[in-house]
Image (cartoon, rainbow, N blue to C red; front, side, top):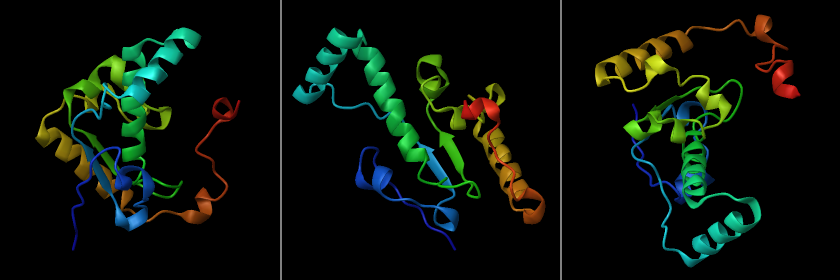
Length: 154
């Protein structure tokens, strides 16, 4: 049994609810969730950032959109033992101006061979990942092992 849940970025489900463990195993992001650029609040924020920090409008908009994407895909992975599939279904995510604004915990898996693939290749990658992750783990051997090294801590 399974279910699909469709949500809109910047909505309640994309930021307020966690779908950890078996409640959510895949997020597909279709399109880049840019904010409404004619908002007076947004224009005031952009003007402040430009004047005080020399951050250009397009840089802030790209950062804000990718922060939102990170929030959305983070709904399925909420802890060290959780896993999920993230699909960025828009060619704009392969552009450095977007991709480089994603957090490192996502970028480490977003390799060149996993970008701009066909549906068949993507399905094969997902199938192999799910088969591999479904294998029983040896929790006693993994106890006390950190996913971070000294470079992540410093």
